[in-house]
Image (tube, rainbow over all chains, first blue to last red; front, top):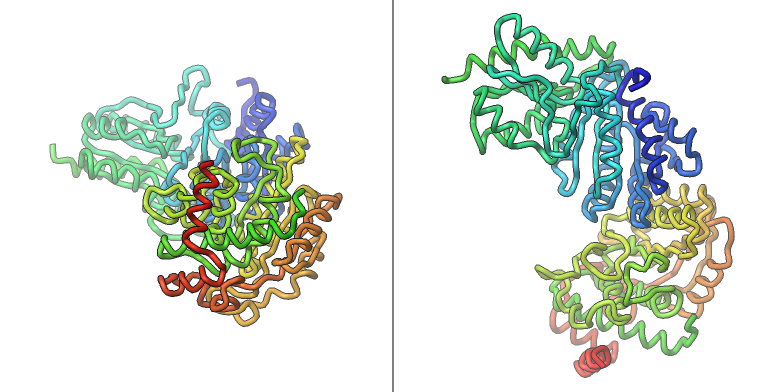
Amino acid sequence: MPEKIPNNRVAYGKALVSVGEMYPNVVVLEADLGKGTQTVLFRERFPERYFPVGIAEGNMMGVAAGLATTGLIPFASTFCVFASMRAVEQFRNSIAYPRLNVKVVATNAGIEIGPDGATHQAIEDIAIMRAIPNVTVLVPSDPVMTMKLIPMVANSVGPVYVRIGRQDTPYIYDENNLHLEFGKAVLAREGHDVTIIAIGNMVCRSLAAAELLEREGISARVLDMFSIKPLDTAAIVQAARETGCIVTAEDHNILGGLGGAVAEVLSTEMPVPLVRVGVQDTFAESGDGEAVLRAYGLTAERIAAAAHTAMARRTS
Amino acid sequence: MNRDIHQLETIANELRCLALRAIYLAGSGHPGGSLSAAEIVTTLYFSVLNIDPTRPDWPERDRVVLSKGHGCPILYAALAKRGYFPIEELWTLRKLGSRLQGHPDMRKTPGIDATTGSLGQGISVAVGMALGGKFQKKSYRVYAIMGCGEQQEGQVWEAAMSAAHYCLDNLVGVVDYNTLQIDGCNAEIMEIAPLTEKWRAFGWRVLEVNGHDIAQLLDAFAEAKNTRGKPTVIIAHTIKGKGVSFMENQVKWHSSVLTKEFYEQAMTELRCTEQFFKEEKEALHA
């Protein structure tokens, strides 16, 4: 990658431009947050294929559905809060149910957005979106992954929800060694004592937690579960079998999101101790992004502590 | 464009019979709003639309979005009569395994262009279809049929704003203005008037017609086609339950169960016999 991309939003904007170069039928809809979601990059390159709908997310979903029926591939962007909650019934009935080829890429996920406060901190979107049939739900963790994922999204058939954070993100992957497939977790780090399953901004923190654990002689596996739906059930079961306990880490409510999804798999396939790191079913508050993450327990230290808890509960 | 008013009126009556029989056999459904839209649907499907029932997915076809999706029995009747699927399939309406869902499903039913039923959403989808047509320089036109209660949905006005913003003169909205909704009349539930002024203020060309007068509907659709630079909405003043005396202007016939007694009375009023259904079936198989 020639230039360093600061975060997943900019990676999305850039990927969207390259997807636009590849496919003349890709169009972009935006509900007046193009500077936040970075769809402005597409607007600069392809103004004739960029359709602002104003601050009207419900209408945006319907217009995207209509465009999709004509053979176009609409990418519709806004913040996660609005895409997954304000406009969810439009998304469900106008897009998901008729399996229309609309790609909803929403940014500013989780409490890490910080100062804007709880109204804008989406902590429910994964739970909501993964409960809707026909929908693929993806959460990229670094700019390299986002750049790879967006062309795959454009190439896929059917409704997709992509969840992207706001803050700057370190690179985790090398583009030449990152193989992505929907429904297949990425093994971010091998380990055999405990498995940390993480998504989005918690993947780099989980890797940092694995470093902390290594200093204590604990070998932690880190799975990047970027594909929430379809979910890599096999990788979860294998991790449960091989490491005997699981920690999940997400910038989302522990109810219904990654932690919920993993709990569903473990309870039916291979019950082992599970500790869910995430927002503990509470609204967060304003503050510097990192400070908010710390205040609500979304840190490498808390993930490492959760690993200890999970290992202590293991019977073997 | 077919301007044989007498023939179109006859078809509208036939569609009423087919829709009511489908609802009767289903044991549920929405007779009132199906009957009020009979002439609107007839005028579109038997005169205005550029469609080919042998190719429901023909990319150049005109599109219809029944934004008031609960009125689908009258639409299914029109599609069956146009030959998209057999007449007798109408009798499977709302039953398990049927291609005819309780609300329109574009993936199941040949000829249905948009999945609708959640009010306010269809008009947005129609805007997207019209925008996609403009963007791809296609000449097809898009027709969205809305209910009057539906005008209370905020999304209708989001969609209205966007259609005018994108100068979608290939889009025509029709409001089936029968003045009634599930819980009562519009005026007592939530006043939608003045509708003409509202749509005009949102940048649309507005035409008002008697929604049961096929000549007026034909003229309005023709006028919409000749309008440049803005979308057109046709406010069609209708009577809920039109054609069946005991249903007309009765709120309860929005979705009441059609008993055998009521069904037979309705069929008598519509001068519709079992022989009619037999002939319809034979004509289609001929």
